[in-house]
Amino acid sequence: MTITLDDVATLLHISPHGKFFDAPINVNTNNAARAAYEYLGVAWEEALAEIYYNKYAQYRLQWLRDLYSRLIQTNQFECAARTYLLHLVGCTIFADKTYTRVEEKYVSLFIELDSFRDYSWATATLVFLYDNLKRWSCPRHSTFGRLHDPIIGIYVCLYLWCSAGFTSTSLASVSGGDREAVPAHPPRACRWNAKHAVEGELMTYRQRLDALSHEDVLFTPYADDQDNHLFVKISMFSEYLRFGGVSVSYLPERCLR
Image 1: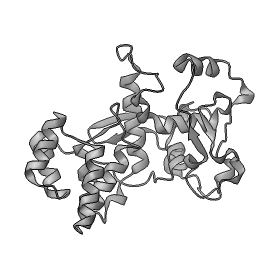
Image 2: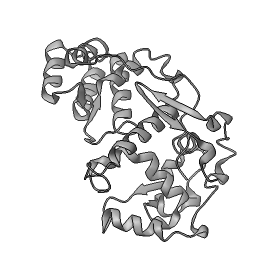
Image 3: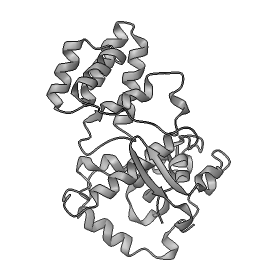
Image 4: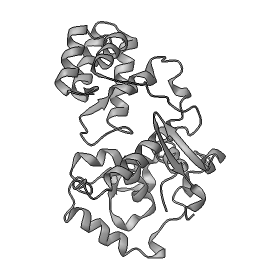
């Protein structure tokens, strides 16, 4: 079993339809500063200072929050909208191992505010997840699996998927303590609250997953939500998904359902 486009679309209510994102080529510190200057409404000197502070083509999430407040006060609403959206994806679907920064290349997703909805956001989320899972499951990345570590930001969809399909793993608690009390129309991600501290960390979850029986697995975890979020055929697409310069194989026919 693995997470699919249908899982992402149902958990987060973002569309699997749309075009792939082509990331800018040769993103360097000067290009990152120029993007902040042109699209986020930042003074050139401040943009350079932010990039040099990070030493990479990235922006701090706290810096984006402060910038957003300033832009609203000066009525620069288009730049404020881009800043807000960049911060939103930086702390959710594109959260990296730092969990405090977001890459500059995602600014180009929001240059045209009227058309950013045309991208396949579920595809982007899944490719980002697959790519980071591949890299962070390598033995040399010793921080993988420590659930209190910021690396967990990458796995928001995987985290929710496990909560929906493997109820006995106790990855998250039901929001409000009553699953049935939560309306069906919001994203299913709203149904759970994350547990921040886990005794035993990775080994605890590994033992729980190993102990799962057939009865512990919900093979149709979204059956009660199909009226509000219908299954779409594009979720059964099989070949490669692309986001920016990254391509991953996507083979839903190999998933147990």
